[in-house]
Length: 267
Image 1 (cartoon, rainbow, N blue to C red):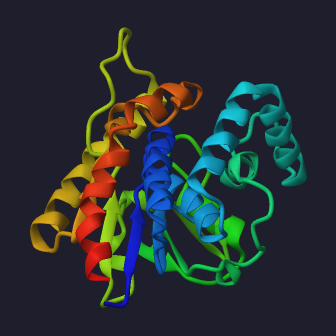
Image 2: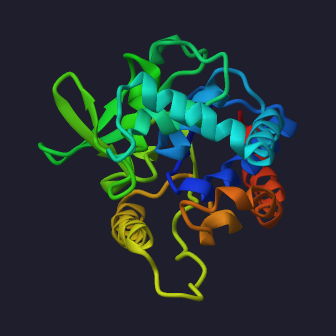
């Protein structure tokens, strides 16, 4: 067997559940030969493809949450560097620069493990799978959530979140690999105590649409391994609940080990 490929879905803060799954892979000594990711899954995939461990990612996220003012300063510096005014739409590149760890290469094709980053072309209405080019702008294109961020312009084309058309891109992995897919966006967020705001409505509508598309894809061509952490119920913007999300997703660690046992034995 040629090995396994790893697909990581979008889902905002719920994507912290991916990190628990990666910690399990690290404990098994299992590394994918290819990764495909959408939105937060693409960002986590980039860090993992560059050699960062799941434990290191957990520490990075918790450090960011525990020092929010430093993150805000980084965010505003990125906005100023982009020449964006205070009342302008949030540029996705500024958000990506805020959360990405240091040490990533400038170009997508320079990652040690091949990574496919999925975004959606707003004009042509097609899903686009990037395998080369400037890394951070493509991650920003993949994570440009409608209603939360401005579209990302690349070479005269405007891109929005890849989850609009392909939130769990296991179909973008190379042929011949066992496809291991981690989905963190299939359950609805927890009920609101108050009426949902505009961003909650926009991201909630996206989740409804993503779920319908994913259900159709799973019925036609399911991956060999599908993991759905308990983090699914958290909303896109529950970043400050990172520690709670890690705790809720903890059972994923053993689930991944069980699912991967047969694959590793065959390999």
